[in-house]
Length: 200
Length: 150
Image (cartoon, rainbow over all chains, first blue to last red; front, side, top):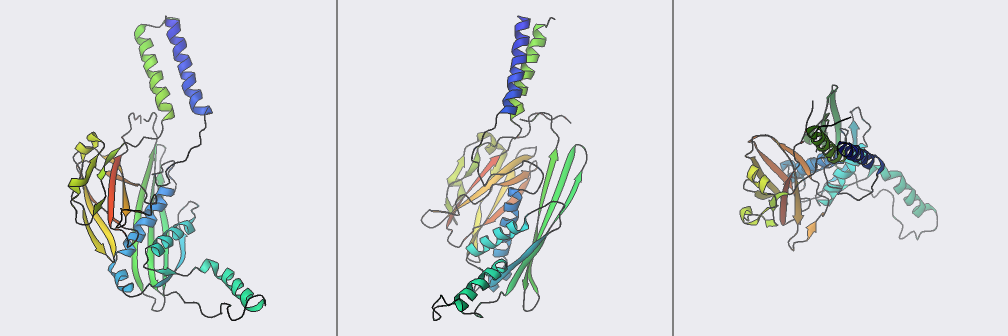
């Protein structure tokens, strides 16, 4: 009887261990779910930062005044990554500019595609293949009135049992003509990681 | 080698716990409480959905307020904990237009939120576009860890 129980226990342990190590399953997850795989900057942080900043900008009284009768033209300067991690900050600015554009309150010029636009205009003007009366003209683009820029900073502290990371994201809106900062806001994220022996 | 019945029982219990916990490192998210689609000015109490009775005794949604700011629907609500320990929560807003069609469906992320014992906090969100007329909210719980050895 005892030997049987021992044998069952051992085999159950083996099943439990092997079941976890050998099995890999692929499935589609919820892109909007909270991701806590590790302490590094992740998808939930990106969504939080972009969402909070966009909300704050869109409901600010200053933006109410700016967008009263017009849709101001903005361009997004890069977000400076001052953290110790490698973070694709362009992804944050992409999310923010997309949300702002979709809100219908702002228009954007994309500085990342200036060269491609120039090449296309040169092709239309100079290649001889495009009807000159229908070719797009140089010098008709509209300049941005406002610049969106910011910083992402982090403070990381850890000991052997616990890690703590604090992110601070700052975003500012500058009037390019006057140089005045019309709007600014910051958002914070704290993440901690503790060692656990058994978790449920 | 002889094992007493008691030892064998505890051994089996330990193995069972290990076999269950070993694969479940991420705490699961439970069902929660929320509201059906409500329009600005409607009383949320009439549209409250409770899918988790245990959570509904620990967490209350205070009156949901809404207003139009810069043509966008802005929501503000209070989450009150009546539980003495911290609650690990996630909440999500969903947005709908006048005809009840989902706006930016699937793009509204779940937001993590830690509510300390007996704490009340204000949660706010802003509609992504000016077409939003109604919204719904859902709050769910990430259960506390079962075992913790430090």
